Image (cartoon, rainbow, N blue to C red; front, side, top):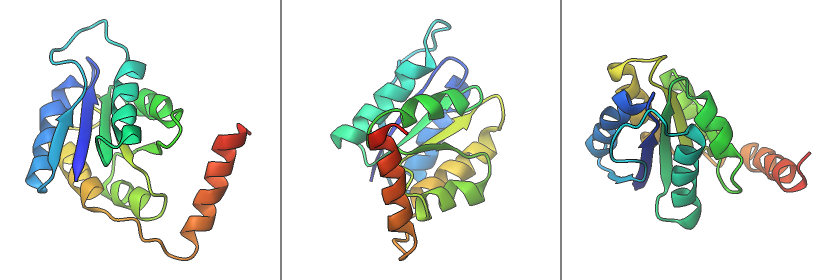
Length: 150
């Protein structure tokens, strides 16, 4: 699996941690954000870069990192075909893939430390959509909300 990653200035401390966890799980990292920390970067740009890589098929999943995880999650979720969610515990990190087919993990570098980030990313990339009978109809309803805008 190829996983796109990016971080804004606040998320930068966890960027290498996330990349290392992805590689440690046997997957390929596609870094799409800025190559250096810039206090003037904006989280929507980071979210767009990762989301676009997923939507284009350059990456199977993505990890976006800002200060709280909230901003990048909201921004990435605005993109058609991206299902982003914040996870700061391992249960959510794998369950959001298994039940909700989330394809972008958002985390906050000001909320969690390196070890928790490593565990979250590993749980996220290790999870597989369950495709249990109850989940696809729910996701169809989410897609309907996205397409109608309400």
